[in-house]
Image 1: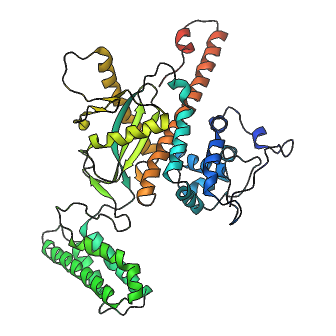
Image 2: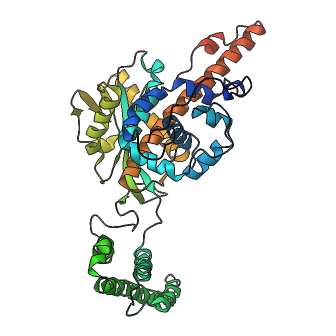
Image 3: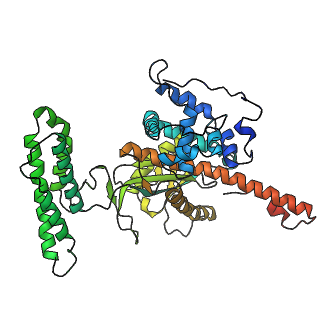
Length: 445
């Protein structure tokens, strides 16, 4: 059920948060720049008006999601920091300081599932809107696009790890359903695991290989024993899980659509040619930025290992959906070779060309600015390792990371402008015109 509307009147002369905080703080300015009514009007349809427990305010939940990615925090940490940080509370719409956590961390999970990918795109669209004062000055929709991999929160997959996890899962199913297994192999698996420790030594490699084969055989035996002894009415509940176990046991080295994780079976393997990291396990992400301002105007996730050129149509469709216009020129790297145009958007791939114009050469060079943006998304905005569950979690994580980058860019421009004005005031007070032109010139990306 929807939460009751909050009063915005000041409760007391000295009780308002707004009277206690620094009104030049970036979070204060950002809170007053975002149009929160857009979220309330759009997300109200996901709540019942009469039945159910009263929900948390929509602005509070959206604010927590933004703060989570702005400060690179987990669900647990962001609600804990909220109870200690007065700026967090003002950003989320509170009028007086609240010394308690705003909600249980799992309520953020429910809220993400409630608004879905469309709600995340609305947050990204709002982050683009607040940066438009820089975009409207001579921008002709020239964008850069590149792909990367957002890794899933899984361990590095090996066959032995997967087989042992299958065995443990079978033990859990047997205990929950009170199944008397023909043999549990608990002590046997423990001895075989000790033998596997010496697989890289001269005298233990042969025994370790035999131990690995034996563990795979034991996993198959337990799966069949569980399937035989489960009651018919309970078999349907565990059938998808048992089929997944069987697929892991039957997959070969050169198979396609392999299973790399039991709890995240949709994870794919990517090789991007990195020297320090040969393989990455997760999903492919396409990022689109405006060349003039550096604002991320498109971010989309792909669950299949597509060629880079096959990802362009979807990210350009998203750009058109979020910005209500089409990109005129799209600059990409040589990994996109094979596509030259999509609708009215011309695709420019670097190639030897003696007749290239100076303007195009500059824009090809400018394309490389997307690389540090992707680096910041990974290191500072939770794109490096995705902790959200399943394919919907992949889609939401990349969109919220992009939105956080845009919000932070707006904050940095405010700070840069404040420093510029201070230097200008200092220069004038000293009565010197040194670097006056540089100080009075507005910063650009």
